[in-house]
Structure formats: structure tokens, C-alpha cells
Length: 269
Length: 269
Image (cartoon, rainbow over all chains, first blue to last red; front, side, top):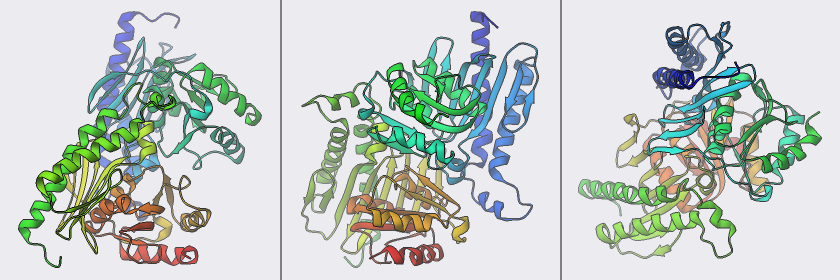
């Protein structure tokens, strides 16, 4: 799709918010629910994370069947459903399973609507905090417990003053980790364990970089749309497209993106 | 003080909540404020974190001057003020400076009222989420965006099924880290970067262990009171008192505390 009318833009953005609204109660039903997690120990016991994932994605698919039945869907839990419009809804009902299991409010519901070139509009929603980051079609917003604010990624600063987020040391190969650590040695502060919330912090202008590896399309398209709408950049470790996942770097501005990419280049093979 | 009357218990708990209420707007004024953090780069520019710290602690000291003028105070920013009652208010206006700087809502305001043997009542407050964990005098509660619930630490489970939180690899000596890593190798899941919020997750029954080192009294007394009120245990790495800080282990129950302590014993010298 080369051109998307203003009407269609409004319809798609509205649909994305409807998806996030539908996912919230499904994810919250299982989050921190007493006794649920211990069910994991029983053979045949049900897995609350997968259950939360499935119910949230199913709720979003019901909304799409109503509002945008001809678009394709790519979801973590129920795979790919073809469409006829050239648009695909890319859904990760719970990104940050480890955080969700541990009760930490850094997981999120990731939603994007994409064409073949990548995401056009995306949402990172944190249901427990009640905080939603959205971006695309000329807007970038955070709606949270203290009101609404515009998202704007940070101005350039040297790597030596930068804040880097990652899910390493938890994920990635040894080679992936070497690349991340080479950048980590140059920055002022490296923070761990924030899951998709780290991307929201780049869009908020609070952090400079997120570097990860082993991502799927549904892990990155929602955050990518939000960060790009806030003025940031998301690519793979060679500067190429990142919307299919893999090794991903999200940066607040072109300058710090280039500085980090120069270091990662030695590890991008 | 050997006995604290029910009236005094209510007065102290009420005062602790008044302190947390007073600190909230002071910490939120600087959190994610645009342009503030860049002030750090200027020689003579002001440091927003220290400023947030100072204003929050000053606000709490004003409340104490009004409500409990004869108690002692130990605060991170303004040090020790003597008292005559045998009670000390132990205050950390912003625990988790790195998280605060990076915009991540895992920092907290820590408050405890203690006698010589340790904290009697404590609070871990997360102003951005609007979530308050409190414990002592027979109650343990979480008041958050989705209502109130009782805090109850988890029932015993093997280390191999446990969730461990820490601020390592960011803090601690090489020897400290070796102790933490010896336990980390035995657990199901290790999570990083949660700051004081990790202790709240133990009290919530979401996590089993927090292992840290290099703590001050004001880093641990608030969380300690909350976890103990929820049925958990907080000691140093040898099983001794932890209210003066140092190397600290917080555990959901005596069984997993003993299992982790047995591993840490080889690193507690």
C-alpha cells in the first residue's frame, strides 16, 4: 500500500487501541493471581502464562474479525492468518514472559499494523500500570497514570553519557553477547530486565539504546513503530531492516545509532 | 521498647503512610521531567536525582517534626538526628537511583520505624505506579492501581523452581558476586534490575529470593519490615541480623532461606 488515507489511518489507530483494550483484562486476570503459578508444577496442570497469552491473543483476534476482517494477522500464539488488504496485524499478547511470571510490571502487550515494508502504527501497552505507548501516522503518545504526554526520543549525546537497556545476560548466543558487551563497556549505564518496557523508555526520551538478539517479528514491530514515531531509529545490527526480528538495535537518534553500530559491526557476522 | 501499645502502633503506621504521602509529589516532580537529566552535563548544573532525593527526604522530615518530634531519624540524604523515644525513622527517599534516572518505575521510597532490634513497620512505595507495600504490627498490604490485597510470601519450593532477584551484576565485590552466582546457578529464573521492587515481589508471593550486598540500613529496613510481615525472612548471608545492611538475603520462607544460606556459606567470609 503506497498511500493510506487519513480516514484509514484513523481507523487503523482506533483498531489498534481497541485491540489493546481487549487484551488488558485477559492479561490482568492471570497476573499475580494467587496459586496460579504453582499449577505449573502439576503434570497436566495448566500454564498460566500460556493461558494468559492465548486468551489475550484470542480476544484481539475477535476484535479484528469484527473491525478489520480482511487484514492478515501474525500472532505469537495462533500464527499467521492470510488477508487481502496488504496490511498485517502483528500481535504479541504478552511480551516478557519471565517478568509476567515474576510479577514485575515490565511485560507488555505489543501490537502493530504493518505493510510489507514494516510497521505503520504500533502500541506497547502495560496493563498493570495502566500505561500505553502508541506511535505512528504522525503521532507519538504516552497515556499513563499521570496523564498524557508526547513521546520524543532524546537528543544526541556521547556513548559515554548514554543509558543502554538489554535483556542480556538472559538471551542471545555467545557471539550476540560479545557485541552487546562491547557497546556496554562504552556507555554510562547499562540496565537489565526491562523487557519491552525498555523500548518505551527510548521513546520517552529516558534512554538512548536497546540492544537485543534472537527477536521475532512480533517482539519488535510494536516497539519499532512507537520509537520511530518518537524520532528514534530501529534497525538490525548492520543497519538493515529489523521488522522481521533477529539482532535488533533501537536508538534515540541517528548519531548514537551510528556510534553503537560502528562497535557492533565487529560482531555482526 | 519492649511493648508498643495498640494506640502507638496505629500512630506509627499512620505516620509512616503520611511520610510516604509527603514524598510522592517530590519524587514525581523530577521523574521523567524533560531536560532535567541533561542538567547533569553542565558544570555547576543541578543533579535532578539528588534534588529529588533531598526534597523528598526534607518533606518527610517536616512531617516527622510535626507528628513524631521526639523520635530519632536516619536518612540517606541528611544523616542522623537523635531522639529520646528509642524509636528511629529510617528513610531512603529514592532507592534505585539508576532506575529513577532511566525512567523505569522500579525505584521506591523506603520508610521504616525501628527500635534497636530492627524495623517494626515499613513501607515500600512506588509513586509512579501508585503502588504501596506496607507491613508490620500484624498487617501486610499492597495498595495499588487495581485495589488492595494482603501480602503473603510464597510457600516453600525447591531452589530448582525458585525465582531469584538481584541488582548484580551492577553492585557488589567479586567475592559477593561469586556467592550470588552460586545460588543463581541453582534456581529456575534469575531477574535483574528491579531495585527495591524485588523485595515487594517477595512479599507479594511472586518471587522466592533477593540476594544483594553493600546495602545500607536505609536500603533494607523498609523492605525487611514488609517481607517479615508477609511471612518471609531477611538476614545477612550468615543468618544474622540484616537491619544494618551489608550482605542481605530476603527469602519467602524458612526452607528456601536455609537452602540458599547453605550455598552462600561458602562465600560469607
